[in-house]
Length: 320
Image 1 (spheres, rainbow, N blue to C red):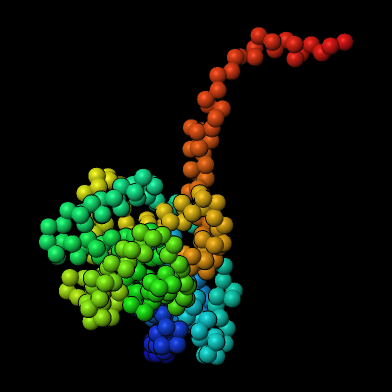
Image 2 (cartoon, rainbow, N blue to C red; image 1 turned 120 degrees about the vertical axis):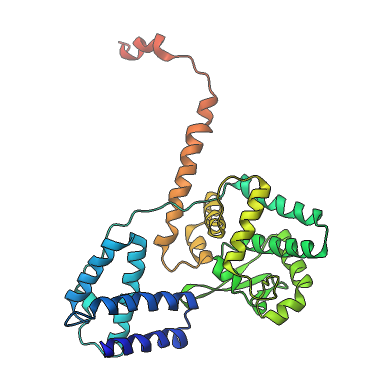
């Protein structure tokens, strides 16, 4: 077991310094691998197919499919590392069937009109600000929400933005996504550009001191939780009853683009998905919209056509 503990420590360091994975990913890997170490501590061989197989079965008994999928991925990546470093002769995952049916949960989106109402409330609060502090908070909050919706970036990606990642001369945003993957998105809406430019101008000194683009009132990096509180606050002011999360802006970004006939592969690239199958979940949401259109907005519903029943015998009696 001492060897396994050492291997896990080496692997976490490899992920941190060589693969440059973010803190949250490293923490998840550490938790998942420690769990496997604790599970296999009483077993004879922690590297055997049988041990890994039994561990995966125990995961299915304890957790929801999404959590199981993550923990299996963590363990699989670890064993792949051991194989790559030639510390392991046989990789147990090469002979394991780890596939399982996972229920597809449709992403929750914000209706178009609700996003419009939400943004209108933000700008209204800015105009109603009575103090400089309130005004500055509104300027920052507008920039955060506008950027979330304009790019569909994850909240963790937004909060981790550095000043050098945002180029308002060329209107480009450099985003560091999952797995240390980079992508560049462009801002095409003038209102979004104005919101970011005003924020950068007002918070210039604080941004420089903090080292991150979005700053809280203590001049520290803006946290995910702060953005969640912010969204709750403005949703209540907007009179929106739906519970809105930062990730729902990402879902709405993708779904609304899909409804505008944007190719799904472009959306995949903009979201930073490594697999098209991850992006295809939005087609199911789009199909719900399609059903609504065909049921309620099809022009046939507006037509009044006389019943053809009176002349139906003519169709059954062909001319001789």
